[in-house]
Figure 1 (cartoon, rainbow, N blue to C red):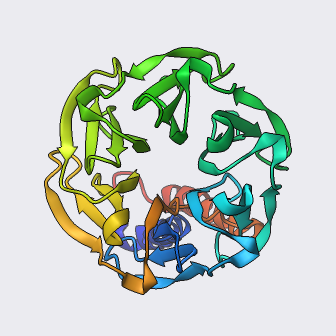
Figure 2 (spheres, rainbow, N blue to C red):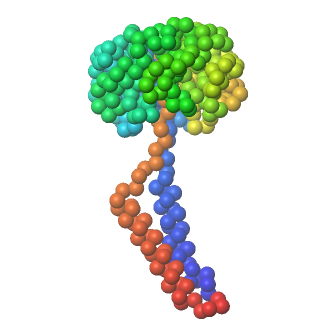
Figure 3 (tube, rainbow, N blue to C red):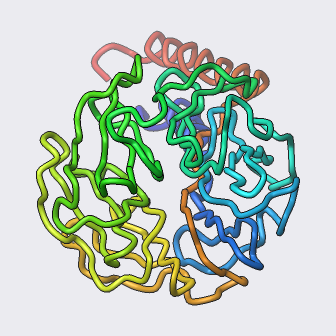
Length: 336
């Protein structure tokens, strides 16, 4: 008898659980790869299997010329550095359609832009190889803010990849001196040569990423390695991956593994994120027309926000559960 009286409440609770599970379904985090030469665009691959999906940003779309860095922004769109035109271009994060030249040609002195990252303050930071600087732009409008890292600060020359670290500071690969330099994440003031010149055999630092273990991983483009350094002291730990052909972009996937743009072999390779052991050629040589992959990023997995109608429905479900539960309690004889 108790089961019969509770059936209505249980069915409503089951419906509520189903609604919540649907409301929190995550989008597939596909892999996006910037490629140069005849490819000259951004290719999309299934984030689980590595199968080619589509040319997300077509060759030369919006004037794109030699993409070097790419990142999804807070608004969900994709931002790409165009080396040949000295710009940062914005593309729709769902369709890949060209939106705008987010950072205009030469804005703030931008010359041969390479890496880019959105900072903790929401602004966009871009390495300007031609002027040996890191430039800051408004994260909403693209307007120039300041030369966040001044020309040559701390010995910076040929800035490549950049990343904000767990401590909030900015880390920049410097081809000149074969080092990784650290700057105050708020002021841009030089802090230290976090990874000293040629530490661990570093030559030509390219992609930079902090791993799940908190350490810094750096592509050494001229030695064909990914080198690992202590995320606290910058001390050399190990040659995490070897035998590569001009490794460029690096990214850790949601499975904890490391994905490397093996630029010289037109591949994206996957390695165990703990041991560095080879897993697979995640994106095979030339898949989807891939030539000269320079940079990688996964689309952030997003949780769809329920609309107002769904919220009203949820409120109705909750109210019904409460009213039904109270009615059952009042109608149930004591002792049952």
